Image (tube, rainbow, N blue to C red):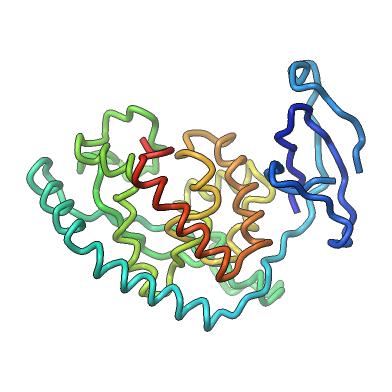
Length: 274
């Protein structure tokens, strides 16, 4: 469990008991609230040295995988049927405005099933942190955006993004082809966003709790995407990980439907995309 800092006027640093019944949470807490040690006015945070937390393991809330799979499959198929006219228009716009393929494929890191088996026996030649898969997106950048094949973080105002691609990214429409990944069983509609293996390796080294988010299937949308814009640096990812781990502890059908309903306003009003 990652201890998170409260978003109240004063920042409270607390410690949590392992007994979940003794937890004290508020809706304004990003993560876990805990025994108050000291209160620091936000105006004096610059004078406070780095605070270290003892990292606990986060176990996903139990849920029926069979029911979850059926719900994700039904939602993905219905969404593809309803959104197919929009996706055809997007495909046509991409084809007419820039050279290159309509769809863009990337290798991403998915579910780490070893965390469920609790086994120390490792059969993989290389530990990617989860099962890798090919994720699909509408192409939003020039075809030569990564000539050397090296993963590069997209930045705000990235010159590699095409004019149509900028619109797609702001509205998160470029993610719609991942409904196919949901049908294939590689992703869920809701879950932590999957990352590329090279970037995953860096984030796992920089953020000790990062690997825990792989304990559930990655998703097209998620609690982190509802609450925060695209990430452009490690600090942005660190904040998103707090939301991802919070989702792991609350995951379930009702929570997934709630996040799906909150995703629509994000898309319609282009909140957080660039």
